[in-house]
Image (cartoon, rainbow, N blue to C red; front, side):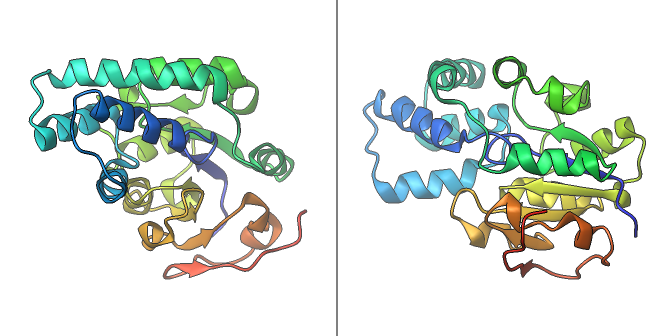
Length: 236
């Protein structure tokens, strides 16, 4: 199998933003006087990680019996997160160098993210994602708001890149994202930026850092049959 493209998730994969969303969720819940402890925070993080904001908002509304509509919850979460992202958003360590390697190897690249338009526009403009991906930056709106863990978004990005799903490598940091990529028929790398390796077990390969991916070796080897943790490889 010759891989022709690499498709990246955004939050927790390209940008170091999962902490921002965790903080926004904590503030949102504490503002309502709801008892919030470390165990609840951990359980909620696992439940929400990788989902789109519409799904997260419905879960928050139902789980805590909130009076606000899901749309109102979503907007407040966006406002909280955007205030922090304007000050804190940055690339995941090693992403820029790894992306440059993909270009040098002749691979196409794109983004498949559950982020909404507001979040995506802020990050795209702040970090100039267009200089990395051109027009190949896609979110829920491109697939009728059908987000991960459904495979629709990954299938759409592959189509826009002009490659078959089986010719794509996906890089994800959440269980929902991994499921979407695998169900789309792609080779999936789970990158453990959140320190929750057990959530990535459906991925074909699990890594901690981008520099562990040896593109030269990857492009010549067959697809793994089950999750494996690869050892650190020398940087190309």
